[in-house]
Amino acid sequence: MTDQTDASSVLAPADGTNGSGIRVVVADDQALVRMGLATMLGTEPDITVVGQAADGATAVELARSQRPDVVCMDIRMPGTDGIAATRALCGPDVEDPIPVLVLTTFDVDEYLFGALEAGASGFLLKDAEPAVLVDAVRSVAAGQGMLANTLTKRVLREVVTRRRTQPVTAARATELLTPRELDILLLLAQGMSNEEIAGALVVEVSTVKSHLARAMPKLGVRSRLQAVVWAYQNGIVELGG
Figure 1: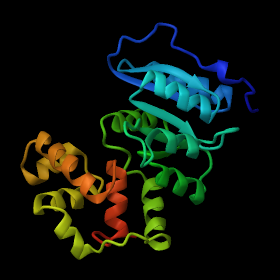
Figure 2 (figure 1 turned 30 degrees about the vertical axis):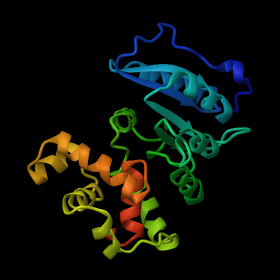
Figure 3 (figure 1 turned 120 degrees about the vertical axis):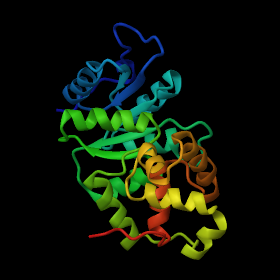
């Protein structure tokens, strides 16, 4: 059943927030799902749910006022849907983006393509195990996105086969990136975390972060997930079967 509450349904956490840990906004038009996600995340000692929204417009308003570390965004909501809300929060024209983790029961490519193009940091189906959701929130909050799950891999595969539209070629990548930045991009495309990349290259994690911070503007992307998509679209790496 779809919840019919309006923008006044924005809910602040009962115990407030002290600014520590990971601050999350949950947006879903179904009240039971929304409250269940908020309750589950709120039981984690390092996560505070700072608000809930029943539609995309309210989610955008709440996120801009609360500045959470992650917005858990449903795709299909009344009025402003999750894709439009994601674009408003972390699209290419947003100066100070807020990371969005898309949660959906709809395993439909077009919805996921839209969320990816809107700037989402990751995707997760709502039937994922609670521990997977918690890990995803932590990963997105840490700036690592969701790169390793099978849903993201399938979306990447479809992007490569159906939407290879980027004008830059693999040869051009060597002109855009330094050798070390290219090394990191290749490892990132394998789904490695900053810590794993640092271990593989025998460098500090801070060094990996610095290289990524310099590389992403060169590629015209704003997140790790978008950097990986860029690598696949331009043939820098190939997505295995």
